[in-house]
Structures are given as C-alpha cells and as structure tokens.
Image (cartoon, rainbow, N blue to C red; front, side):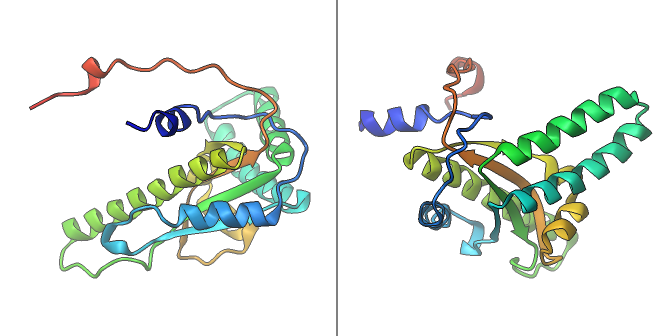
Length: 201
C-alpha cells in the first residue's frame, strides 16, 4: 500500500479562505490537463471549463447569479435584509477567490439512443463523467499546493451563468470551483464509519 498517496488523497480539504497571491497561468494549465485524464462514459470526455481570473469577470458572474438568487428568495418570502446579506456574501466570496473555474457538461457529447430511458441514462452518465473531472481537478490543485471548494451556484442559475460568461448554449453549468492558496487549514471533518455505508456480499 502506498501510504504517501493515501495520505495525499485524505488531506484534501474544502477551503473557502485564500491568500491574495495570484495563481500562475502555467499552474492552472497543468491542473486542467490533469483533470482531463478523469474517466468518462464511452470516453466522450464531456467536461468543459471556463476559467475566470480577472476581478471584472468574477464580479460579473457573481452579480448575474445573485440577481437570480434575489428573484428566488423574494418568491420564497425571505426578508429583504436577509436577501441583501446573502447577496453581499455571494459577491464578496467570488471576488476574493483568486480563481473561479466553472465546470460544464457539453450536452452534444452523447451517443444517440433509441428511447427516452436510454437517453436519460446517457445524460446521467455524462453528468457523472463531468463530476469525476471535477474531483480530479481538485486533487490536481491539491498536488500544486492549492486548495479549493466546490460551489453549486450555477445549478440554480444556469442561463445567467451562460450569459454572463458568453458560453455556448450546449455547455450546461454543473458547478464551479473557487481556487487559490489556502489561508487556513480546516480540521478533518467527521467521517461516516465504513460499517454504516458498506455491504460486503
């Protein structure tokens, strides 16, 4: 057993506070290349990445998503003070992240299927494939001394995300990552015991 590799895999953390230090383009390129070595159904490699490093781009995306959040929170009857606080937090977190990478699923990367059940299964396999690339990306960032956290905001504002970033309509936003050099070291979160989640047959 390679104890060092297992230790590396177990020490990745979800980090939300970053140093202001910029991440070099060559480092990001290396991380993205490693992410593309994730497995995918039928080797279709349906993952797509949009990389944001400028304050303008990050702010524009956060404000677009926040506008959708505001509509949803108003419809849910949330008080205006709570809405404003959440929006301010959303924009601040996006602006403070040195890098944002939006993870998308290319809906054109699918094998044709004869029926709806098969088409739905192929869609799910594509989304699962994209998720494996997302984990691979986080581990590649960890290998470079970076940290990050997986954010699901684009799932709740897909069209706003596409429009803000001028992405192709076929790029279905699945999530995004805040990446940077960590400003803190979160404690190990509790783990569910294997006995509770594994059935040996």
